[in-house]
Length: 115
Image (tube, rainbow, N blue to C red; front, side, top):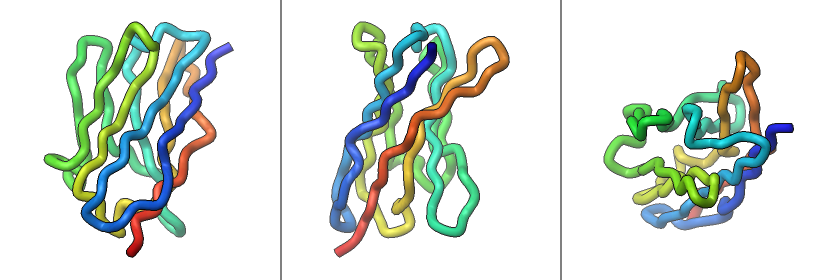
């Protein structure tokens, strides 16, 4: 059974940083593309960043230069380092992967950027 568990969210002031973690079980995360999505209140869920099994990365334009996605294969964990956070980054952040045609989501972790 594939499970994705996010952690690391919280309240941070504008300009601050957070690192989100996505711990995977039931899957060798390094074999699959992993993604971080977010959903802000009243908005659709959007892809923020993704990393392929070969380590290639992709970012939505609004976070380029501020966010970094990475993985620790030994820990079967994917990270999202978020710097220079602003209020528009406030959202629930979800980890995502696809295996054998099935899409898996974590429960999400809330990031609130506010002064």
